[in-house]
Length: 238
Image 1 (cartoon, rainbow, N blue to C red):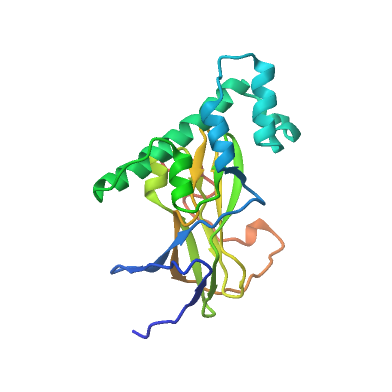
Image 2: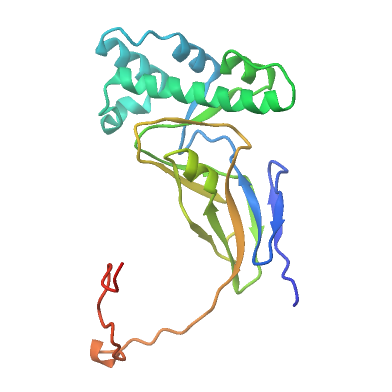
């Protein structure tokens, strides 16, 4: 069977490909963005770590909207108590630090007490924060040239679905698209999540597509009849 060629360019240089008996694909990594996703700098993270959430609601609201100005513009994102909102971000910072330290321990390295120290040591000036109840588009810095008659399907990683409440949406990259591949991330939960640059978020799978010609008919009666008919939404049983 003749193999198709997919040309791939990555701004990050990271495009690990994989092949199974049934599919060919490659991992998609996040790149830093401040357009459709909020950011936290090292200074922001240090301030959040030090903030005492036992104070009054007004102080908490002023603090969090100073760190993330968009929250003041979008009142819907502040439905939660501001103290609870800050706590959710604090927990996200702690979770990311725990994840990093586990990887460091596996390699016999020295772990970190705070996330900002790790970022400083690794020249990471800022990270993306996936806020509660938010919709985000994370660019990957990856561009492809797909043969006509094929597509790249953007599929979520099972690890994200199993370990977080984030939803990485299925997407289609058409053969004539030459732009930056983006990953749509929704967070329908009250939790926050830290996304580092070059973090693996999704995968691209190469797939063949069929072309068809649509024929408009004048009446539903021109469609062939079946036993099932218009039964749907569970009508075929459990």
